[in-house]
Picture (tube, rainbow, N blue to C red):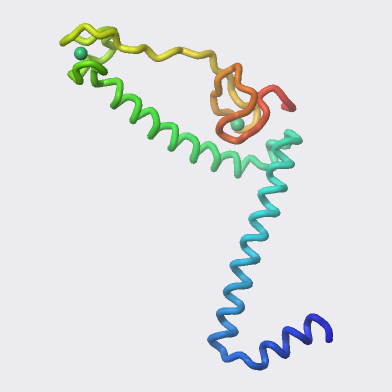
Length: 140
Ligand SMILES: [Zn+2]
Ligand SMILES: [Zn+2]
């Protein structure tokens, strides 16, 4: 029996509801497989430096990355506004707490360079882009 005949004989015993479920399950599986193929293809194009071909995906990566980075920044800002020692609220730009005199840790201004694939700014000494995974000093 061919594969098609096997499927047909199996489906002969099913009602429309079961057949619909079968079709839905196959559609989900197909979606998953398409995603996996797309993901592999995307990684290959990115590694080969074919950034224009994956521009639309990179734009989405930048949105995801940018939104999560902003949340992180807001959390860090909130933590910075309170003194570590006495929990007093710090003035913007304060180097010391006005209540207890504890030094306020300052943001390190690390040198940044744009990723050649997604164009987000990344620390200059980092081997891979933390947004899209491209090599920072690889193909352009
Ligand atoms: Zn303090
Ligand atoms: Zn990147």
